[in-house]
Structure formats: structure tokens, C-alpha cells
Length: 100
Image (cartoon, rainbow, N blue to C red; front, side):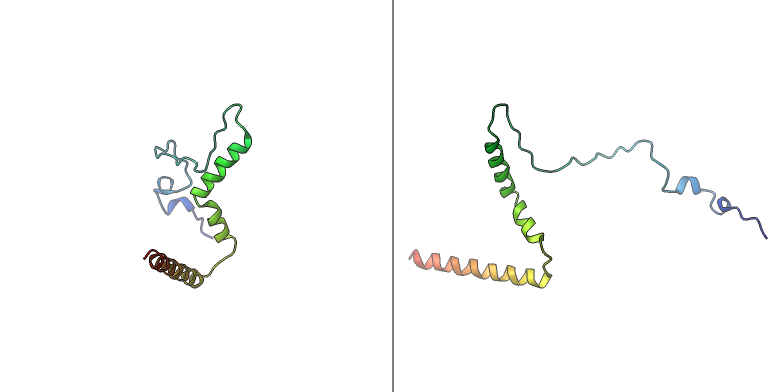
């Protein structure tokens, strides 16, 4: 039986392998994203909750959670979007008719 040397096949194996740790990574790391509400000393917690709810509303977080709660097929998404567009158009037409 022939003695097989695994390292002989690729002489640059140590330079090319992905398992070596890099000594220094100069790429900037992304900052963690999220909503923060800073509570000042003596500030009521309910006021901080109102601020948080307002920020969540502006960022559409609750709407996204509701949409992702259940899987929706792409065809259903398109159908729903088309229905919403038609409803917006009809509302705009009604408002234009009422303003005359």
C-alpha cells in the first residue's frame, strides 16, 4: 500500500485555506440598529412608553410584524395591493366629487 501525503497535493494550502484567523480586520463593523428611547432622570415611564410607541409607529414596525405573522403568497400580496390601490383611487374620486 502506498503512503499518501495529504499536504503534498497543494503546496499553497496554508496560504489559501479559509480556516486561518485574520490578525486584523480593518472593515468597519455595522452598528446595531434598533429603536432607543432615552429616559431622563425623574421622567415618567408612561411618557417613555408613549415615545417608544410613536417611534415604532413611524418605523412601521407593528405593521411589518402583522404582515409577517402568517405567510402570504406573492399572488395574494399583489391582489391585496391592487385592491388597496383601487380603494385609494375610489376615495380620491369621491373626495373630488364632494368638493365640487
